[in-house]
Length: 357
Ligand SMILES: Nc1ncnc2c1ncn2[C@@H]1O[C@H](COP(=O)(O)OP(=O)(O)OP(=O)(O)O)[C@@H](O)[C@H]1O
Image (cartoon, protein in one colour):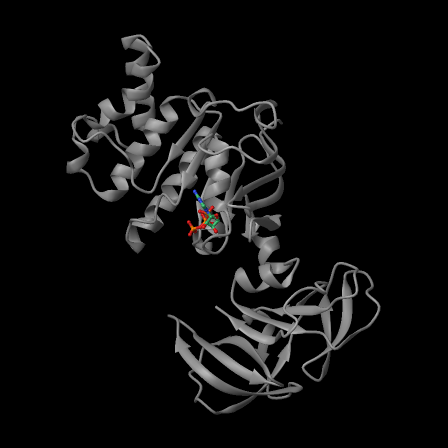
Protein backbone atom coordinates (compact mmCIF):
# COMPACT_ATOMS: atom_id res chain seq x y z
CA UNK A 1 0.00 0.00 0.00
CA UNK A 2 1.32 3.43 -0.89
CA UNK A 3 2.69 5.08 2.20
CA UNK A 4 5.55 7.47 2.68
CA UNK A 5 8.57 7.09 0.42
CA UNK A 6 11.97 8.75 0.27
CA UNK A 7 13.99 8.32 -2.91
CA UNK A 8 17.64 9.46 -2.88
CA UNK A 9 16.78 12.36 -0.57
CA UNK A 10 19.66 14.66 0.36
CA UNK A 11 19.74 17.89 2.31
CA UNK A 12 22.79 20.11 2.65
CA UNK A 13 23.44 22.87 5.18
CA UNK A 14 26.35 25.10 4.19
CA UNK A 15 27.61 22.40 1.85
CA UNK A 16 27.55 19.70 4.56
CA UNK A 17 25.00 16.90 4.13
CA UNK A 18 22.51 16.61 6.98
CA UNK A 19 20.82 13.90 4.89
CA UNK A 20 22.84 11.94 2.39
CA UNK A 21 20.86 9.81 -0.06
CA UNK A 22 17.95 8.55 2.05
CA UNK A 23 16.02 5.70 0.43
CA UNK A 24 13.14 4.31 2.48
CA UNK A 25 9.59 3.09 2.10
CA UNK A 26 7.17 3.29 4.99
CA UNK A 27 4.00 1.31 4.39
CA UNK A 28 0.59 2.79 5.05
CA UNK A 29 -0.32 2.14 8.70
CA UNK A 30 3.23 1.32 9.68
CA UNK A 31 4.80 2.67 12.90
CA UNK A 32 8.40 3.57 12.17
CA UNK A 33 11.01 5.03 14.51
CA UNK A 34 14.01 7.08 13.40
CA UNK A 35 16.80 6.32 15.83
CA UNK A 36 20.34 7.62 15.94
CA UNK A 37 22.85 9.75 17.79
CA UNK A 38 22.52 13.51 18.07
CA UNK A 39 23.06 15.26 14.74
CA UNK A 40 22.46 12.17 12.55
CA UNK A 41 19.62 13.85 10.64
CA UNK A 42 16.44 12.53 12.30
CA UNK A 43 14.81 15.91 12.79
CA UNK A 44 15.86 17.08 9.35
CA UNK A 45 14.15 14.06 7.78
CA UNK A 46 11.00 14.77 9.80
CA UNK A 47 11.01 18.50 8.95
CA UNK A 48 11.48 17.67 5.31
CA UNK A 49 8.51 15.31 5.43
CA UNK A 50 6.39 17.96 7.14
CA UNK A 51 7.40 20.54 4.53
CA UNK A 52 9.37 22.88 6.81
CA UNK A 53 12.49 22.14 4.75
CA UNK A 54 12.99 21.25 1.10
CA UNK A 55 15.34 18.54 -0.15
CA UNK A 56 18.33 19.50 -2.30
CA UNK A 57 18.02 16.20 -4.14
CA UNK A 58 15.55 13.35 -4.34
CA UNK A 59 11.83 12.90 -3.92
CA UNK A 60 9.36 12.52 -1.04
CA UNK A 61 5.93 11.03 -1.75
CA UNK A 62 2.91 10.30 0.41
CA UNK A 63 0.17 7.97 -0.78
CA UNK A 64 1.62 8.16 -4.29
CA UNK A 65 1.51 11.97 -4.37
CA UNK A 66 4.78 13.86 -4.78
CA UNK A 67 5.32 16.19 -1.81
CA UNK A 68 8.77 17.38 -2.76
CA UNK A 69 11.22 16.93 -5.60
CA UNK A 70 13.10 19.11 -8.07
CA UNK A 71 9.88 20.53 -9.53
CA UNK A 72 7.41 20.29 -6.67
CA UNK A 73 7.20 21.61 -3.13
CA UNK A 74 3.82 21.13 -1.47
CA UNK A 75 3.45 23.60 1.45
CA UNK A 76 3.07 22.07 4.95
CA UNK A 77 -0.63 22.94 5.31
CA UNK A 78 -1.46 21.08 2.09
CA UNK A 79 0.35 17.87 2.99
CA UNK A 80 -2.27 16.34 5.27
CA UNK A 81 0.38 15.40 7.80
CA UNK A 82 -0.03 15.78 11.56
CA UNK A 83 2.85 16.68 13.82
CA UNK A 84 3.31 16.18 17.55
CA UNK A 85 6.19 18.14 19.07
CA UNK A 86 8.04 17.66 22.31
CA UNK A 87 6.73 21.03 23.51
CA UNK A 88 2.97 20.18 23.04
CA UNK A 89 2.32 23.64 21.49
CA UNK A 90 -1.22 23.96 22.93
CA UNK A 91 -3.27 27.14 23.10
CA UNK A 92 -3.26 28.08 26.81
CA UNK A 93 -6.55 30.03 26.69
CA UNK A 94 -8.51 27.24 24.96
CA UNK A 95 -9.96 24.20 26.71
CA UNK A 96 -8.83 20.69 25.83
CA UNK A 97 -11.83 20.32 23.49
CA UNK A 98 -11.13 23.79 22.06
CA UNK A 99 -7.54 22.90 21.30
CA UNK A 100 -8.58 19.69 19.61
CA UNK A 101 -11.29 21.43 17.60
CA UNK A 102 -8.94 24.15 16.36
CA UNK A 103 -7.69 22.47 13.13
CA UNK A 104 -11.31 21.72 12.20
CA UNK A 105 -12.33 25.36 12.76
CA UNK A 106 -9.50 26.46 10.49
CA UNK A 107 -10.83 24.10 7.84
CA UNK A 108 -14.32 25.55 8.29
CA UNK A 109 -16.02 22.28 9.26
CA UNK A 110 -19.66 22.51 10.39
CA UNK A 111 -20.21 22.63 14.17
CA UNK A 112 -21.98 19.23 14.33
CA UNK A 113 -19.22 17.44 12.45
CA UNK A 114 -16.60 19.24 14.55
CA UNK A 115 -18.26 18.10 17.75
CA UNK A 116 -18.48 14.50 16.58
CA UNK A 117 -14.83 14.35 15.55
CA UNK A 118 -13.58 16.04 18.72
CA UNK A 119 -15.56 13.57 20.86
CA UNK A 120 -14.04 10.70 18.87
CA UNK A 121 -10.48 12.04 19.29
CA UNK A 122 -11.06 12.62 23.02
CA UNK A 123 -12.22 9.04 23.36
CA UNK A 124 -9.31 7.60 21.37
CA UNK A 125 -6.79 9.37 23.56
CA UNK A 126 -8.62 8.68 26.84
CA UNK A 127 -9.33 12.37 27.47
CA UNK A 128 -13.14 12.46 27.45
CA UNK A 129 -13.35 13.49 31.11
CA UNK A 130 -10.86 16.36 30.60
CA UNK A 131 -12.66 18.06 27.70
CA UNK A 132 -13.39 21.30 29.58
CA UNK A 133 -10.10 21.71 31.38
CA UNK A 134 -7.41 24.21 30.42
CA UNK A 135 -3.99 22.82 29.41
CA UNK A 136 -2.49 24.32 32.60
CA UNK A 137 -4.72 21.99 34.63
CA UNK A 138 -3.25 18.87 33.00
CA UNK A 139 -0.17 16.74 33.61
CA UNK A 140 2.59 16.55 30.98
CA UNK A 141 1.36 13.19 29.74
CA UNK A 142 -2.23 14.45 29.44
CA UNK A 143 -1.03 17.53 27.52
CA UNK A 144 0.86 15.32 25.14
CA UNK A 145 -2.31 13.29 24.59
CA UNK A 146 -4.17 16.52 23.77
CA UNK A 147 -1.49 17.31 21.19
CA UNK A 148 -1.93 13.82 19.76
CA UNK A 149 -5.73 14.16 19.68
CA UNK A 150 -5.48 17.57 17.97
CA UNK A 151 -3.25 16.09 15.33
CA UNK A 152 -5.55 13.12 14.77
CA UNK A 153 -8.77 14.99 14.54
CA UNK A 154 -7.71 16.33 11.17
CA UNK A 155 -7.51 12.73 9.92
CA UNK A 156 -3.96 13.03 8.61
CA UNK A 157 -2.43 10.59 6.16
CA UNK A 158 0.65 10.40 8.37
CA UNK A 159 1.59 11.50 11.89
CA UNK A 160 5.10 12.71 12.66
CA UNK A 161 6.21 12.66 16.28
CA UNK A 162 9.35 14.57 17.26
CA UNK A 163 10.64 13.18 20.57
CA UNK A 164 7.13 13.52 22.03
CA UNK A 165 8.06 12.01 25.39
CA UNK A 166 11.36 13.77 25.98
CA UNK A 167 9.86 16.16 28.56
CA UNK A 168 8.19 13.48 30.65
CA UNK A 169 9.59 11.57 33.60
CA UNK A 170 10.49 7.92 33.28
CA UNK A 171 7.30 6.44 34.76
CA UNK A 172 5.07 8.61 32.62
CA UNK A 173 7.10 7.80 29.51
CA UNK A 174 6.32 4.12 30.04
CA UNK A 175 2.60 4.83 30.37
CA UNK A 176 2.64 7.12 27.33
CA UNK A 177 4.47 4.53 25.25
CA UNK A 178 1.57 2.20 25.94
CA UNK A 179 -0.87 4.97 25.06
CA UNK A 180 0.90 5.57 21.71
CA UNK A 181 0.98 1.85 20.91
CA UNK A 182 -2.74 1.48 21.75
CA UNK A 183 -3.52 4.57 19.76
CA UNK A 184 -1.66 3.21 16.76
CA UNK A 185 -3.50 -0.12 16.98
CA UNK A 186 -6.86 1.62 17.11
CA UNK A 187 -6.32 4.15 14.35
CA UNK A 188 -3.96 2.32 12.00
CA UNK A 189 -2.28 5.68 11.28
CA UNK A 190 1.10 5.81 9.54
CA UNK A 191 3.45 7.08 12.22
CA UNK A 192 7.04 8.27 12.09
CA UNK A 193 8.55 8.70 15.51
CA UNK A 194 11.88 10.44 16.13
CA UNK A 195 13.79 9.50 19.23
CA UNK A 196 17.29 8.96 20.48
CA UNK A 197 15.95 6.65 23.18
CA UNK A 198 16.44 3.18 21.79
CA UNK A 199 14.28 1.48 24.42
CA UNK A 200 11.40 3.62 23.21
CA UNK A 201 12.14 2.95 19.53
CA UNK A 202 12.48 -0.81 19.98
CA UNK A 203 9.39 -1.02 22.18
CA UNK A 204 7.08 0.97 19.95
CA UNK A 205 7.98 0.64 16.31
CA UNK A 206 7.17 -2.02 13.73
CA UNK A 207 10.48 -1.09 12.11
CA UNK A 208 13.34 1.16 13.16
CA UNK A 209 15.58 3.14 10.82
CA UNK A 210 18.98 3.44 12.48
CA UNK A 211 20.65 6.59 11.20
CA UNK A 212 24.21 7.84 11.29
CA UNK A 213 25.69 10.91 9.59
CA UNK A 214 22.68 11.54 7.37
CA UNK A 215 22.34 7.94 6.21
CA UNK A 216 20.16 5.00 7.12
CA UNK A 217 22.47 2.21 8.23
CA UNK A 218 19.75 -0.40 8.71
CA UNK A 219 15.97 -0.29 8.49
CA UNK A 220 14.45 -3.37 10.07
CA UNK A 221 12.23 -4.81 12.80
CA UNK A 222 13.57 -4.23 16.34
CA UNK A 223 14.41 -7.91 16.83
CA UNK A 224 16.32 -8.04 13.53
CA UNK A 225 18.40 -4.99 14.52
CA UNK A 226 19.25 -6.67 17.80
CA UNK A 227 19.80 -10.25 16.55
CA UNK A 228 21.18 -9.58 13.09
CA UNK A 229 22.84 -6.17 12.90
CA UNK A 230 24.21 -5.42 9.49
CA UNK A 231 27.31 -3.45 10.44
CA UNK A 232 29.50 -2.37 13.35
CA UNK A 233 27.60 0.85 13.91
CA UNK A 234 24.21 -0.83 14.31
CA UNK A 235 25.68 -3.70 16.34
CA UNK A 236 27.20 -1.26 18.78
CA UNK A 237 24.44 1.38 18.82
CA UNK A 238 21.49 -0.95 19.33
CA UNK A 239 21.42 -3.06 22.48
CA UNK A 240 24.11 -4.11 24.89
CA UNK A 241 27.08 -6.33 24.07
CA UNK A 242 30.37 -6.34 22.25
CA UNK A 243 31.62 -6.18 18.67
CA UNK A 244 34.69 -8.34 18.14
CA UNK A 245 36.89 -8.53 15.07
CA UNK A 246 37.11 -11.90 13.36
CA UNK A 247 40.68 -13.10 12.79
CA UNK A 248 39.76 -15.86 10.31
CA UNK A 249 36.50 -17.22 8.99
CA UNK A 250 35.53 -20.60 7.54
CA UNK A 251 33.13 -21.02 4.63
CA UNK A 252 29.60 -19.96 5.58
CA UNK A 253 27.03 -22.75 5.25
CA UNK A 254 23.30 -22.94 6.01
CA UNK A 255 23.13 -19.89 8.22
CA UNK A 256 26.22 -20.71 10.28
CA UNK A 257 29.92 -19.98 10.02
CA UNK A 258 32.90 -20.99 12.13
CA UNK A 259 35.12 -18.03 12.98
CA UNK A 260 38.39 -17.60 14.78
CA UNK A 261 38.06 -14.81 17.35
CA UNK A 262 39.19 -14.24 20.94
CA UNK A 263 41.73 -17.01 20.34
CA UNK A 264 38.92 -19.57 19.88
CA UNK A 265 36.96 -21.30 17.18
CA UNK A 266 33.43 -20.03 17.59
CA UNK A 267 30.31 -21.22 15.80
CA UNK A 268 28.34 -18.16 14.83
CA UNK A 269 25.11 -17.41 13.00
CA UNK A 270 25.58 -15.60 9.71
CA UNK A 271 23.92 -14.63 6.46
CA UNK A 272 26.23 -16.28 3.97
CA UNK A 273 28.94 -13.65 3.54
CA UNK A 274 32.43 -14.13 4.88
CA UNK A 275 32.26 -12.19 8.15
CA UNK A 276 34.65 -9.57 9.46
CA UNK A 277 33.08 -9.15 12.92
CA UNK A 278 30.87 -10.89 15.46
CA UNK A 279 28.31 -9.20 17.68
CA UNK A 280 28.09 -10.91 21.08
CA UNK A 281 24.99 -10.11 23.14
CA UNK A 282 25.02 -10.73 26.91
CA UNK A 283 22.64 -13.68 26.63
CA UNK A 284 25.13 -15.37 24.27
CA UNK A 285 27.84 -15.33 26.95
CA UNK A 286 27.56 -18.16 29.43
CA UNK A 287 29.59 -18.51 32.61
CA UNK A 288 30.71 -22.08 32.34
CA UNK A 289 33.41 -23.76 34.49
CA UNK A 290 34.39 -25.86 31.45
CA UNK A 291 34.19 -22.96 29.00
CA UNK A 292 37.16 -22.38 26.70
CA UNK A 293 37.52 -18.63 27.36
CA UNK A 294 39.11 -17.18 30.48
CA UNK A 295 37.94 -13.68 31.41
CA UNK A 296 38.53 -11.26 34.26
CA UNK A 297 35.67 -9.29 35.82
CA UNK A 298 36.21 -5.54 35.45
CA UNK A 299 32.78 -4.23 36.55
CA UNK A 300 29.75 -5.72 38.25
CA UNK A 301 26.54 -3.68 38.47
CA UNK A 302 23.20 -4.73 39.88
CA UNK A 303 20.35 -4.32 37.40
CA UNK A 304 17.40 -5.59 39.41
CA UNK A 305 17.17 -9.37 39.48
CA UNK A 306 20.58 -9.81 37.85
CA UNK A 307 24.12 -8.48 37.68
CA UNK A 308 25.74 -7.06 34.56
CA UNK A 309 29.39 -8.06 34.28
CA UNK A 310 32.05 -6.52 32.05
CA UNK A 311 34.58 -9.22 31.33
CA UNK A 312 38.06 -8.73 29.87
CA UNK A 313 39.07 -11.54 27.54
CA UNK A 314 41.84 -11.47 24.94
CA UNK A 315 41.80 -7.67 24.80
CA UNK A 316 38.02 -7.62 24.32
CA UNK A 317 35.28 -6.52 26.72
CA UNK A 318 32.36 -8.94 26.81
CA UNK A 319 29.13 -8.36 28.69
CA UNK A 320 27.35 -11.10 30.64
CA UNK A 321 24.33 -11.26 32.93
CA UNK A 322 24.45 -13.44 36.04
CA UNK A 323 22.19 -14.05 39.00
CA UNK A 324 25.17 -13.91 41.42
CA UNK A 325 27.46 -11.01 42.30
CA UNK A 326 31.06 -11.39 41.10
CA UNK A 327 34.18 -9.76 42.52
CA UNK A 328 36.20 -7.26 40.54
CA UNK A 329 39.37 -8.94 39.33
CA UNK A 330 37.86 -12.45 39.69
CA UNK A 331 38.71 -14.87 36.91
CA UNK A 332 35.82 -16.71 35.29
CA UNK A 333 35.51 -19.16 32.43
CA UNK A 334 32.93 -18.72 29.79
CA UNK A 335 31.58 -20.06 26.53
CA UNK A 336 29.88 -18.25 23.65
CA UNK A 337 26.62 -19.38 22.09
CA UNK A 338 25.64 -18.41 18.57
CA UNK A 339 26.85 -14.83 18.29
CA UNK A 340 25.94 -13.05 15.06
CA UNK A 341 28.63 -12.79 12.37
CA UNK A 342 28.47 -10.01 9.78
CA UNK A 343 30.59 -8.43 7.10
CA UNK A 344 31.63 -4.80 7.53
CA UNK A 345 35.12 -4.27 6.13
CA UNK A 346 34.86 -0.51 6.71
CA UNK A 347 33.63 -0.94 10.29
CA UNK A 348 35.50 -0.20 13.45
CA UNK A 349 38.96 -1.19 12.23
CA UNK A 350 40.10 -1.23 15.81
CA UNK A 351 37.11 -3.23 17.12
CA UNK A 352 38.52 -5.87 19.34
CA UNK A 353 35.67 -6.18 21.72
CA UNK A 354 34.67 -2.60 22.36
CA UNK A 355 32.04 -2.37 25.00
CA UNK A 356 28.76 -0.64 24.35
CA UNK A 357 25.94 -0.07 26.73
N1 LIG B 1 19.03 25.00 10.01
C1 LIG B 1 20.23 24.40 10.03
N2 LIG B 1 21.34 25.06 9.61
C2 LIG B 1 22.54 24.46 9.60
N3 LIG B 1 22.75 23.19 10.00
C3 LIG B 1 21.70 22.49 10.44
C4 LIG B 1 20.38 23.06 10.48
N4 LIG B 1 19.52 22.12 10.96
C5 LIG B 1 20.27 21.02 11.21
N5 LIG B 1 21.58 21.24 10.90
C6 LIG B 1 22.66 20.26 11.00
O1 LIG B 1 22.26 19.07 10.34
C7 LIG B 1 22.67 17.92 11.06
C8 LIG B 1 21.46 17.05 11.38
O2 LIG B 1 20.66 17.74 12.34
P1 LIG B 1 19.32 17.14 12.94
O3 LIG B 1 18.70 18.17 13.80
O4 LIG B 1 18.51 16.59 11.84
O5 LIG B 1 19.87 15.94 13.83
P2 LIG B 1 19.11 15.02 14.88
O6 LIG B 1 19.47 13.62 14.53
O7 LIG B 1 17.66 15.35 14.91
O8 LIG B 1 19.80 15.46 16.24
P3 LIG B 1 19.19 15.57 17.74
O9 LIG B 1 18.96 14.15 18.19
O10 LIG B 1 20.31 16.21 18.50
O11 LIG B 1 17.95 16.39 17.67
C9 LIG B 1 23.42 18.41 12.29
O12 LIG B 1 24.79 18.37 12.02
C10 LIG B 1 22.93 19.82 12.45
O13 LIG B 1 23.90 20.64 13.05
